Length: 83
Image 1 (cartoon, helix red, strand yellow):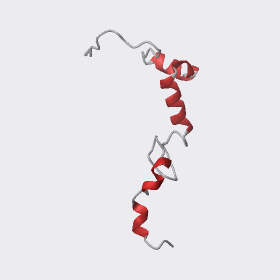
Image 2 (tube, one colour):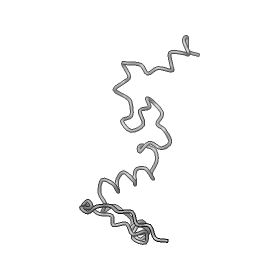
Image 3 (spheres, one colour):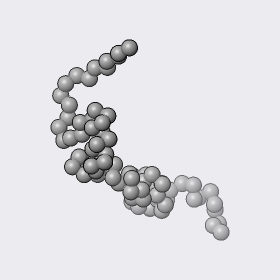
């Protein structure tokens, strides 16, 4: 048992270099952290390099009308309402 349990609530300034740059935790990462979750790792990889998008996800995005690529959209976004 620790001598002062309340001291564990605040990060130790000497340990600040060990903080995870993604979730900010010291020893244990959050469940959604890129270092732990392969789905989050895939999402980061796809945003960084669109060529890493799987064929399945390409087909899903294509069916939804999404053009996933390296070049940003240059036009104006307009919301169309059809009744």
